[in-house]
Length: 282
Image 1 (cartoon, rainbow, N blue to C red):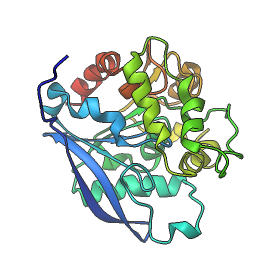
Image 2: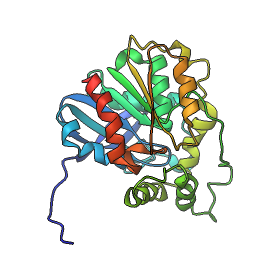
Image 3: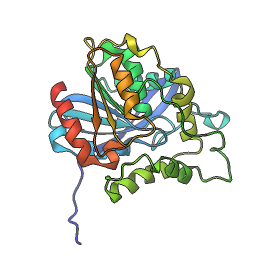
């Protein structure tokens, strides 16, 4: 099959900013114009998970989509002196990174959409910083999930961390997801930096417990949408439904034929669910 050359619409750049007093160099890709829509990737991955959203002309007609790689992830570099530290993502550092990016890009009350750990931090943004955002979209998110994995052995020289991480999350992809999209999703995990997946899951397992805190979310101040795949056994549908039940006004939907990585594992199916949400926001 002959494929004609074609440029995709997204453009990648670096922005220099300060996060919790430390200088950082953060990579992001963007496309479209209109309401800013900041997209947060999952643990151990990067902004490439949102490439289908970035390339969607219907979304780009109304939204300026920005997907950035968290520090230590993808093309974003760790802070100077990283070799003397162990990477551990905390709630404070995560929220600070998102707010610093939005400030550096001069975004006026952006929409933020995050998946997995990105979905969990969206709930924290709704609790502590809701007035800064136009709307918040939490994918595969809940106030807490009981860990089903052990990461204590993950960062060691005799284990290929990337391949193990991909194997660990492979079962979270729905059986309906196209083979090409499934393996592209796993490829991103195979490329994660040493110890990054483990460090992200510190936030997920230890520092990001939001039980009892989500009751403080005011959806009149900032609308909140929760969408979770029916095949996700990391953040199970009942976890999301339990969380939504504590938040008056939160809109919740369980996505059929989708797992833990909706935007990358089955972009066409995810589009069916996210377009109506974005239409409400627009």
